[in-house]
Length: 466
Image 1 (cartoon, rainbow, N blue to C red):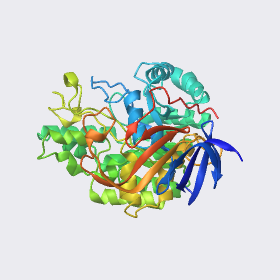
Image 2 (spheres, rainbow, N blue to C red):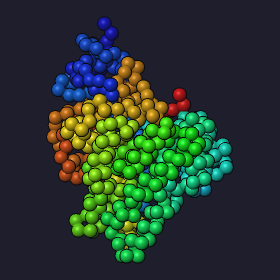
Image 3 (cartoon, rainbow, N blue to C red):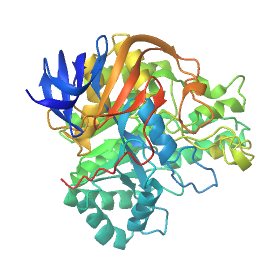
Image 4 (cartoon, rainbow, N blue to C red):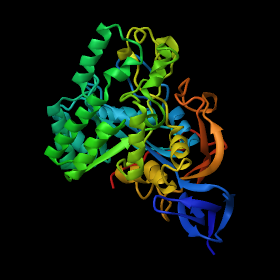
């Protein structure tokens, strides 16, 4: 009988396809056997627990520079530590090209930022903000061929957005090079128009961010992005979809035969625009400012329907962490942000709480099946971004990235228990059912009972040239 390095015994294995009880034999960091009565030099008793694939979070911002001096709360060390604590074993952050910067240099700089710091495995998307002839003709095609097979574009933010012609040009490169484009779909002119009207009326509190970044602006931009993608005939991903209006645009495009993928995030399941009011329309609402913003309860219901019926392909955190009160006015609470919602740094921490929120609100409450949970959080993002079957599933030959999950334990989300670099969580005080108790990365325990046990640098970079 083969003797494995490690055997996980008697757990309920849950994959995107089915659930069954078996042992998992692990050798040299990979799943070597799935069966019963397996022999190992070491063993882990998983009786009473579920064994899930390690989470794949395909939308994470770490060490990302900003144009206004605000500093992200997580670098690669703290951000990947938080991922491991939350049951995620692979993250895909973004290498941001600043205007005037070489795209290749942006990628190289990001590798320098990550080197020796990661607790879990990583692979990079790119963000294209300056599609010069050099970038479109040489750098972007070459980088895609080198394995950077996905990149993001923005339709809003002064220092990030592309105009319609630029969108069409980068879509065309993606089509030729077989790359996948992620689109932040919000209409910039509509947002700017509403922002100016609200400021003129003295409506500058964080709550009015949700009024400026309206569902109409998201719907319009989603429609426009899909139209451009259909014209070029390229598949795209509409990221962080917040409600029914953009989701209906995606469904309509699919009915026309277009290849479009949809992503949503925890904030659209459990937060609403009312959270941006803070305690009494005060600055506490800045803790909930992100784009697109959380909407109303009807939008929440629409997102849940989309998660259950297959309209959404993936569930990501869009982890974009800022401190509320950073040093030297570098957090959300800074003097300029106090003058208008438009200066509040956009983004929420969420890489550590992504899985527990979807499990508790989805699986524990009967809104989605355990298998759908695994598909949304691990298998589908691994497939979509070229990491499957190495990541995102429990198959012989795949990396032994596994999470032992207690489906019945009840916990309360508290900032003091989390591992990210932010000084708050927007989910403070939320009661959840289901929690990861042990995380394994390539067969090694990296988190147990809330304690991250591995060292920075144990995570590796995942090449996607295959």
